[in-house]
Image (cartoon, rainbow, N blue to C red):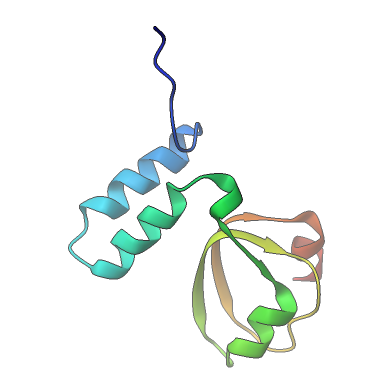
Length: 91
């Protein structure tokens, strides 16, 4: 019987999940749980949705992928696990 690795196979993603889980803050533990979930259950956020829900100089965390549908018309900081090429070009 072989052992199957569940969760992300990327070393840096696994390390991030472990480090976030060790923190005392509940928000980082919740983000760690979201990141360790299967890929189909991760969050995918479009730029227009991020633009609609944020204000100038906000800092947001997306425990998943940022997609390039829409535009952002104000300055903000986004921390995400992955970002599409279209979203990177629009920055």
